[in-house]
Length: 475
Image (cartoon, rainbow, N blue to C red; front, top):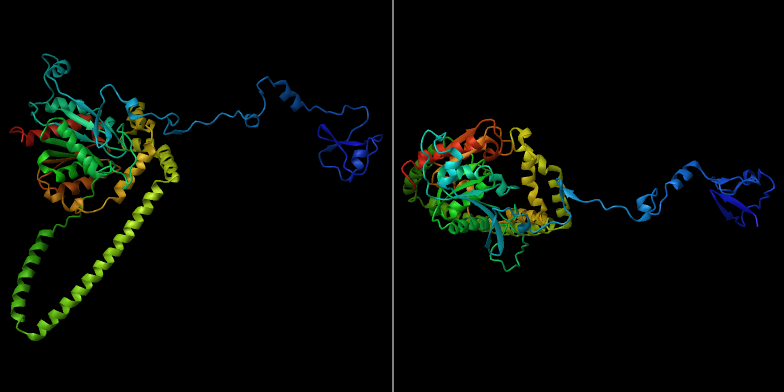
């Protein structure tokens, strides 16, 4: 049998190949059909040739297969997934991540995580000392009502961590902050319209119900609501749901679209009223003309037809919107949407926190850990998607919020940072103009989080507001 060599292994020559005469050292070179990697062999040489690279790799071979690529051995380590630096392997139930001062309140099957800060006289004595006077020139008013703190989108009870105790000391009141569904350590639940749950836990209506229920849990009839960013929407909607339960509203960097207020609105209204009066007088003079009466009848018919067409178009629009909402919900509940949420939180989550501060260098690891802790909760990404679906598909049965701002009659304080990059301070100014009797305070060198970045200024601003509003005692 005649053979030719390929690499280091001998192969049987194919019948199609010309037999080689191995007595000639140039036989391999003469064979035109040999592969490019075929090597010539001279009698007397060893059949196997060992390259230096092969010797080095062989020298490192151990019993466990060291030196070989892990993927060839099937022992490649699985890369652990993380989002914003939080390991996504072995996510936990919210209660497993609770702090020693955490509480849970059940509402419609949802475990609402919250914390309560209680003022005590002993605490004041310990902090100020027996003979140390308070920094405040006047004695802080005793409000007599609890405070409910409402965090913004992507935040949690943690965002109020630095402000809760000072608020309790200032007002001699209980201060309660809770995590809205989809955020913090409040339990995550799935929801669809076919569920037997009476209310979508991710809806605005549920957040309003939770706010009122927590006021009841404190055995209080009324409370002061402090909302931050998107939490201001909950505060204002709670007021409109039960205005008698709200003592005052404090809106911090409010993410509420302010209406465009015309300076000549009153004049326009007065002119409109005058025009209506003139029109009514002219109608009285022209009703005697039969041609005009016929024309009016024809115009009424056209108006009725136009109204019918508009109603039909509105029905078609509602149908299209309904189909759009169903399609949107299906997309947001897909595996692709879950992957997209993880990617967005991983790439921009920490960046968004830093961008919320005026001075990003003051964002410590403690702050980052506080904001990313909810990413360790099971189902955090699907809950965020359900929250988004609820916000985008909620029916607009009530008038837009911006059209009802002028109806707010309780005391309102609006606080904003002069360098807020997320909700500009000019929006807060417009909002203050739309709410009668509201007070606007702008904190300098401050971003989107006055209650975290400028705690002392934040508390002193609230103190001045309370001195003005509650100087005569609780209302």
